[in-house]
Amino acid sequence: MHPAAADKQPSSSGGSVEKPETGTRLSAGEIHDNVMSEADEELERATASLLISSFASGLAIGFSFLGGAYASSLVSPPYQAAAAAAVYPLGFMFVIMARSELFTENTLTPVLPFLHRRDLLTLRKMLRVWGLLLAGNLAGTLLFSWLMASTPAIPEVLKPLMLSMAEKATAPPFMLTLYHAIFAGWLIALLTWLLASTHQTGAQLVLIWLVTAPISAFEFKHSIVGSSEAFYRAWAGSAGWGAMSSFILAAVIGNAIGGVLLVAILNYGQVVTERKEKGQTQTEVQE
Image (tube, helix red, strand yellow):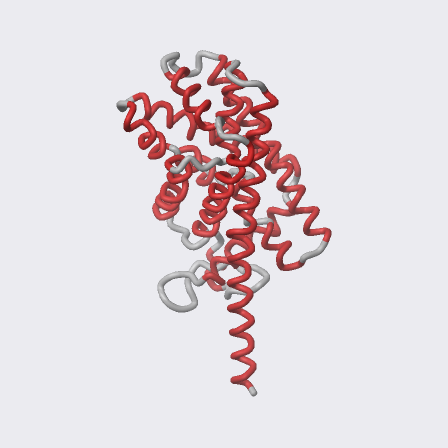
């Protein structure tokens, strides 16, 4: 964030805001402007840049899966789910603090310009970003899961536990996976919104932990972490590639629904409504 950005006032075009105009916290409109300040740049990023960033994210997010298995190995069975949930945010911390790209984070950022403009060109740009990020993320998790399943990258004692976790995570049928994925998509898009409310690294790390740990604790389905689990099963021979692809598809659809409908559209609607009301009030005062 450039220092000069602190002087910019909130606007529908997305001027970046560091300090609240009033009070001690940023308003919904100011958070919206912080998200929008990066949205148009995101839509215009080069294909190679998006693919490399998303591939790196796919590799790093796998540490949520691996870290959960390691934490589970340290406790007795009744506490394994809680231990895995506590460590689940690890991969998200790596990805978000490194400013890499996850498909699920971008069910908010590139959607806002489309909601403002509602034209075919912006829709195409948004779908392009989604497609590139999803492809890069899945390529990264595919490689990460192969390294974990087929090479001596980790202690052999962890592999049965990772397989057990992966089998449990990918077991639900298509529609139940999709339903659970809606909640994960909601939480991750909400995290993107919340992160735009503060520039403090410590606060951002706390927010990442608070928002992502429930995904594991409540067995919601995150498509990218879930793909590392699904691919691990396929590499280990525990499930077929077709069945695991079906699981990933359901999770992707659910994540997109949760992010777009429950965060992007609702928060956009809140900000637009508030600004219309404020504009009407100012007009009445001037008259």
